[in-house]
Image 1: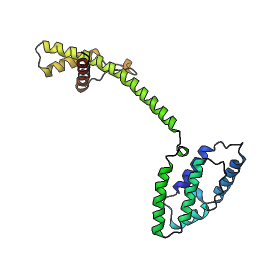
Image 2: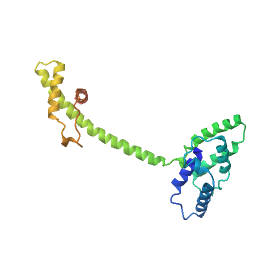
Image 3: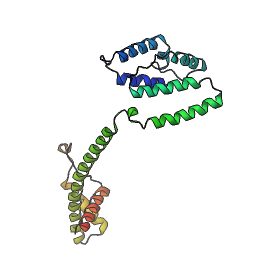
Image 4: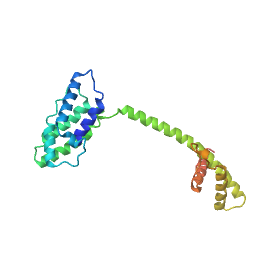
Length: 219
C-alpha cells in the first residue's frame, strides 16, 4: 500500500506538468490515470483508509496486476518502484514462510536501491552544496558571536577586578560586576533585533571564562 502511494507521489513529482514532447510518457500517464480511476485505490490512498482487511488486500493486489506496462523512457526511479511492486505481486501466493523470507530480502534490496543516484530526490552535489552553505553560515555567525563574547567577557572581567581591588570577596565581586554590567547593557524596546548580551550571572561568568581562555592562549 505504502509502495503504491509512493509510486503515485513520485509520478506526480516527476511528471507534473506532463512532458508533452514524449508521446510514450503521455500515453502511459493517461492509461495509468484511467486505471486509477477505474480501481478502488482511491479508497486506500486518497481517503487514507486504516489498516487493510484481508479482503481489501486481495482486491488491491488483483487491481495492481492491471497496471499498464512501463514505456522505455520512464524515469528510472519509477521503474525501480514499479519493479518492487511486481516482485511483491510475484510472491503473494507463496507459502507464509517463503513469503516473509522474500519480503525480508526485498526490504534489504529496497534500502540498497536508495543509495543509487536515480532514487535520490535531490543529487548528492546539491546536498553537499547545501551542507557547505550551512557550514559557512554557521561559521560566520559563530565568529560574529565569539567577538561579542570576548568583548562582553573583557568588560565583565574588568568590573570584577575593580570589585576585587576594593577588598570584596569573590562572590560579592561577581555580584558587583553583574550590577555594573547589567546597568551598562539595559534591555529596552530598541534592543529588539540587535545582538545583546545575556544578563544571568551564569552567562556573564561564561563570557568571562571565554575571554580569559582566549587571553591566555594569545598572550
